[in-house]
Image (tube, rainbow, N blue to C red; front, side, top):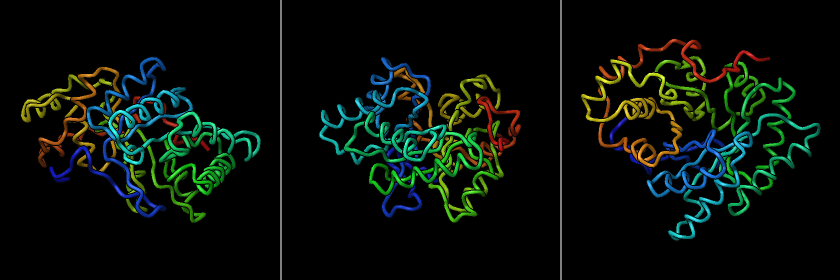
Length: 286
């Protein structure tokens, strides 16, 4: 990846002409409702233009409140902020599932649409996944979502969609040097599916890694910036999460340095496969 990447850089998305996703996102997993609004506002002031939420996080409304207020205050178009949410399980009927999706759009309350809606996990089985995908397609036809995709999908789950001539625009999975999920990444690249990387700084579990600290010292940055820059240079869309203003800022300060080939090889060599994951991995579900 070139250092020409900036905080305003975007990737084009499949399926919708002109749809683009900022290459750095801001996650709100486990951010309490009374903190989410403040953190998202800080992120937007810092320069983030991509916020990632979910029904499961129970803070969709707070994300929308922050984006709406910030856009009004700064005279920024709502179209300039990319907002994602997710659904885990289907309801009993497609219409009930669709109503759940619509409720999320209403909670976010940003001009009647969200930019991206994902199937949060593949754990509802083949019929459940098909049910969710069909409901998302219907939401798209209603103009309530710009683009649709998946999260935590393994090779067989993605292939299941592709075999039906359905290709998600996005697959959001755990990605960092210790869990690189290479087979899934290769399939995504083959079909031009954007890979979003959650847990990109591994929840701090490798903050004291000697190689990472050496690379950080070399570039005069901190350990988390090294891991996020690795993700960017791999072509992923990292989704760092923090409620600390100074950390929110440093996690976005990734464009004044570039990891060299030696740095990348050192980090690439740390892959432990599934053993390196810090989040539950559902890719082996039916």
